[in-house]
Amino acid sequence: MRVTTLLAALLLAAGCTTVIRGEAKRVGAVVDPGSAAGLKVTEGASGPRSGVADAQVSVENADDGTMDRLAGNAVTDVQRYWVEQFPLTFGKPYEPLRRLASWDSGGKNVVLCKSNTAGVENAFFCPSEDLIAWDRGGLLPMLNTNYGPMAVVAVLAHEVGHAVGHRSGVTKPGMPTIIAEQQADCFTGAFFRHVAEGKAEHFEVSTGEGLSKVLGAMFALRDQVGASFTKRGAHGNAFDRVTAFQFGFGQGPKRCAAMDAKDINARVTEYTFAKQDDTKGNLPVNEQTVKAIVENLQAVHKDTGAAPPEVTFGGSCAAAGATATYCESSNTVALDMERLAQLGKAPAKQERARAIGDFAAFGEIASRYVLSVQKAVGMKLTGEVAGLRTACMVGNWAGSLLQRPIGGRNPVGTLRISPGDLDEAVTQLLTENTGMAADVNGKGVPSGFARVEAFHVGFLDGISACTEDFR
Figure 1 (cartoon, helix red, strand yellow):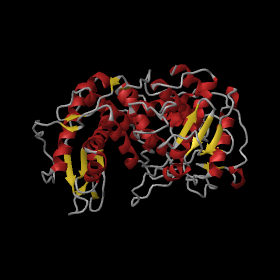
Figure 2 (spheres, one colour):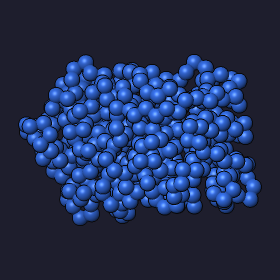
Figure 3 (cartoon, rainbow, N blue to C red):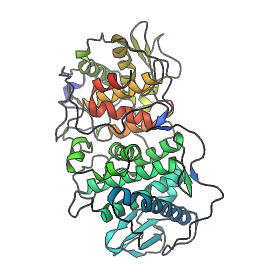
Figure 4 (cartoon, one colour):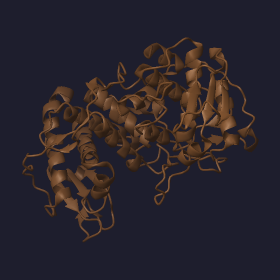
């Protein structure tokens, strides 16, 4: 997060909070706290099915190890899905890939698609050779260790998604890279719906933690923070990639095929750092910056007529173990600054303590602040619907701070969303004990998918969608 001038941290200008309905609508028709786009939240096994024989598939340069078998099974299941769905979506048969290949980025160089693979941790689709290839030595083991085997499946489903785009003609020559990448992420989501419904031969995924881990893997697969979606080779930030995945999961491959420049420009959030952003998007979380956040929250919600809550740094209202607490009886938000400061640090690989980034901390504060707005308009503050409404209203606040080059709302005050902030929001929303999607008692929404989806509703459609959809 950044401020537009160095002196603006404590002197935030009030702004207009007119709601503008965006053209890019939410990922699903209804957000259910106990479901992922209509599928009941389940916990249990996520990964390869036990007792199922490996697929008999030819992979060039394979070592027949765990990663190659996992990848081979993944490509097989994904292609079987498209054999069924491709004719229904595009009106013609699906042609299987001609070649699959594997390499070890830490081992011997292999030339694939006229490129050397030594030291390259990647997976790709090569249209000219109708080839999908993957790094079994670096990329796939990293994903498997950090996010589980279904993250590996997601990467391979994404690459097959590129093949689908080319075979169907929705991926056109000269098309901006970001459109093709969003299509492939969306096609990945469509396949994962198939897995979640229990229809894949080799894999299963729970719609609770299992699906949340897959969404969380988007953080590892995002572009470098501060990249632009207009750059050739852009894949998108985690927020935009998760959005596309959820479109596919909730609405199916026809939604993916409809993606074009107009759709992308209306909702994509991957922008470069502003020249004046000398903090690179991560403000320190201290009393000074918190006061700036609170003043901005007041400006954003001014037109609601709600009396602003008192914000205290600690005090009797604070709940043990909570980063932020809203006390309804006194209309007070109490903050645990030590916890918030830790949460708001830029994450470091060597740091074990939980750190996500400044927006994760500021989003927690906003989540308790918007409860006071809900109270003022007479809405129930307990229960899972209240948790979704809270996530939605935090999303509305985030949307009011986005300075979008192409269309969008007029940003409020002098605080602005910085590159990386929305990725931090997704990461925090997928955290089990997040307050960003919790009711007044801290009871969270069980579905990580639904938490992120509700945030998107507010971000895209504004505060009126929050009060209309989550009653």
